[in-house]
Length: 397
Image (cartoon, rainbow, N blue to C red; front, side, top):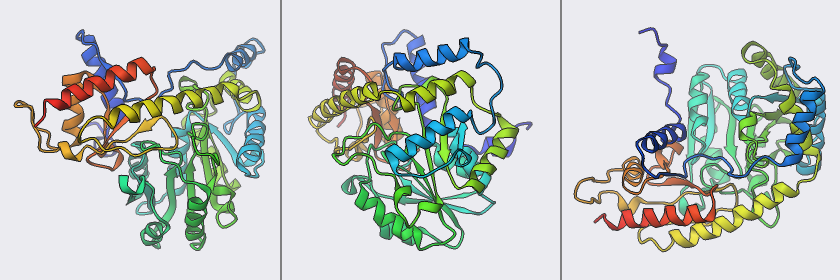
């Protein structure tokens, strides 16, 4: 076969696969509600779009420096200090075509074959796939719904070996919406800090969608890991800029240079006028972002209230992002007479084909027996979707 083994062995993104299944059903004329993608349903704020248009008119249409325009890297440094208590210079910053590329760059730049990466599970679908693509070995540390999907410092300690290169996690978390507070992060940081060669990759893309009273805390702000944390962030979620494809890292200089070296051979610098929109997003008024956060909190409360009415569905109360991650293990083995639910994948396919609602199976996130539902949709859409799910589940016995 002409296709390489690495691609044949790589898992397809479950979220993108479900989105395609939704599109296929829609093409056949079905009224399908997709709650599978992690994409805010809000438009990019006007002032950010105006900044990008202004940049176009000003001639920002050429190649950009591989690590990013200096204007944006300086803005990112300002943001890191202002919001996260992280001290960086532009030499620590690499701007990429989305936070996903940032994580890919890091894995390719840091991992040798056989190196281990400790991943908090449930995890974002692409973490393990990217680690494997880079020749690394994912080591999953799991916490279930009883633990609010948050792992303990003791679990992290037990997972670290002499082959561990870094620890990778997201907070607020995709897919669970769980958020580690400052006390929890400090305890984990102290564990990692004892291991001289182990770094931290903290995915903070959902930073601005956070419902905790204390707000977001960055693990890199703790002294024990301050000099060996790579903080990943971007513009897609907090600024509704998914299609702009703009992410970034703050990292030790040697790691930033390695990522830029790789990126220079793969994609070069990110889009010029998008980067100027990014400058505006970081330095201008955050009122639109705060408004989105309030809307998501309201939707979360609605979704939890409706899901709790469905017998057999178990939910916790996530503190961030725009997902809920119900445990549906009680439906495993049940049937409507035609379809038997053998696992969470069957469950999601049943919901799609019976209720015409697209959600993502927990297996894709390292959590069999659960599914991810995105509430980045209108309240009316969410009400209709959950009503359809409830009706479909009533047919199972």
